[in-house]
Image 1 (cartoon, rainbow, N blue to C red):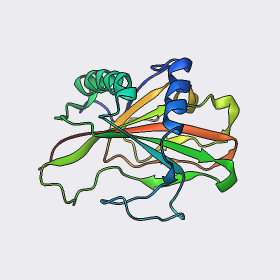
Image 2 (image 1 turned 135 degrees about the vertical axis):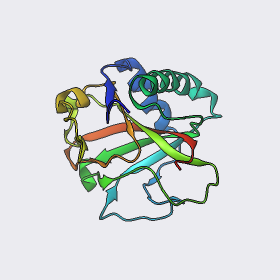
Image 3 (image 1 turned 180 degrees about the vertical axis):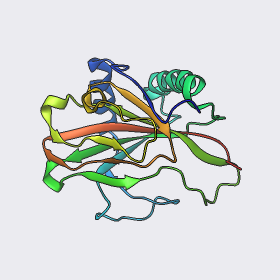
Length: 191
């Protein structure tokens, strides 16, 4: 592994970000949950609304394709994981009305019910113009080789990749609404 994170500034255009939000908001919302089976509702740790975008939904084929291109290049350049699967995406809404946030966490579940896969590479896409909300910064913790510039990570369309075992968080939104997209690239279990 050459690094603990990388990002593509402005990887998605403003028009593509708006389309992701518009089409994503047509999907049914639910309160964000956590855990191996996604059934733990803990609003002390996570407050957000989410919508799930499935790989078979043809409206989003272009999005899965574009994310795979960036993931393969990022993985080849930085992480060298064996990634083979992207099953779904998660559109997250963090709103000031409930001080939306997701406290420090990892995306990998070391002990899970899946006999084949672990989450290996996490991806976050910044979908909201940063001038329209306050707070809500994406942060990574306990990095050994330095931290990215916060303003770069807030830039509309920026796409961030990190190993799923890196601690990260979305800080509380104090004004406005922030939308982001999460993707998890799976591969054969770590041994």
